[in-house]
Image (cartoon, rainbow, N blue to C red):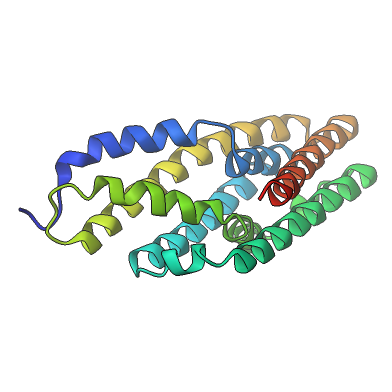
Length: 209
């Protein structure tokens, strides 16, 4: 046995990519940020999302994931906060659309980072993702902790590259319409629609528990 088992990495990378390319909250959020606020905001937001993923990964690696996941009340509170925050983002996008002035000029990169971090941390499904996926790729590693840490880093890097690219692509459309009041309003309304849809999905998930 080796300290870490690299033989399982190719399979893990493939599994992560297949999971990430499926439409989900983080992907939709990156599209909304890119469309509404441009490429710089998208890069800051994906950095925040990946930081949130890192926190959840650390929780799982530390062995606390099972404890947190077993508390329905805690997860419900997190989801409610997340839905409320997404609705707040939708409201902000609508305000920007009505004033026809992009709020990307009033928010510094640090604010977009914090926004992405909150969106990530209020998505407790990330915790279940790490709990369900990472242990499947321990392989023959003699140090499960180091193996889990390696897999977590790989996962986060893949999401940063994949979703960061999506955000940059969406941001390219924003830059094209930045000088058009009508185009700017449309992009902000699209962003508001995405945020609202994400919030609705969270609420539906709460009722289906």
